[in-house]
Image 1 (cartoon, one colour):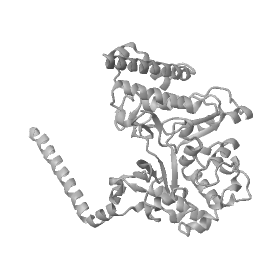
Image 2 (cartoon, one colour):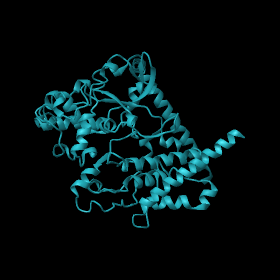
Image 3 (cartoon, one colour):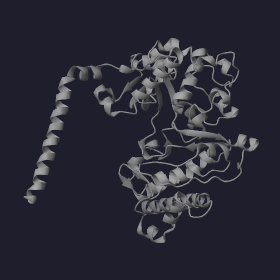
Image 4 (tube, helix red, strand yellow):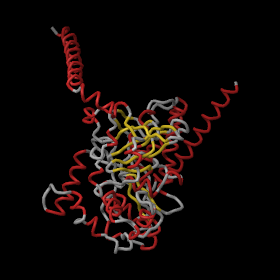
Length: 438
């Protein structure tokens, strides 16, 4: 009887598969009218669909003319609304067209799930009226987003501290940078808050509180060499950013030489965000394979999800000299039962000058054997060539970077790992060049 068990399971699997296909076909038939309508209509020109009707409880209006003119349109699958149930993060691919430049791919984000967006509406209403539902536009003028009005000259730390990761411990220098580079105003370039219109001020503050990713991209732009996607604009509650390329996860089983180059770039990003001439430390609090992408032409690694970035002003830390400010901070390795988890203290990140968090995050969640994602283990540098595995140097550096045995061992291991990966990448490039000549 046992020999028939695999056969029965196989039949059951085929039956379930058939039922799924039939069910999907029925859903398509039931939605035939909506299906054709979805392909014929550009929903991105609909004010209600992009929540433009909720402004100033929105993220901006700088791209509204492009949306309303039909210059932005969903790609094929993005037009099918019944598939939104699978798109929990509300991230879409779209085409953006300019008459002289042609079309190019962009990424559209609502910056939160439908539930999170509904919750922010309820919070605004409760703060203004005490009820979960209300006239959202009128309610905005009764919240803290409106109380910081045109009479307030500067956006100051005590007002917004703790609103989000970006401003967990803000300095005046950081906030001036955020206001000066705010892209959702025609008169950008001034750090004076009073130079913004009332609606622009409320939009900036709501973005800062709900999801500050657009402000991170604007304040630390890719045009100046920061490793983030380029911010393009917003309309209502839809933000447009430049399409970078396939997510890092797509390269998990790429050739060894490619993975080495990507790993080197990831360590370079960790270094740049930790130590730079501006003395802003940008700590990545959410590090996973989905939060990075790789350019198709230049192969450049870019951070594509910057919601959870904590910015510490090293210049201010040196000036204020909080307790133990000059003692190196070591992130503590911890095993956990879920993917892409990290252990850190935000208060410590905000009060120390020398911190190893970014090295730890990249090594543990992306590169080392401790990295787990979508049911796999081994990290981006899994299964190295035999001569590298036999040498043991790579594994030792990754282990010390993730779970250091020596005090301050991660700092030295990260430095040596960057150098080692650079050597491996250079050797691979030289070998490829020789083979092409031969």
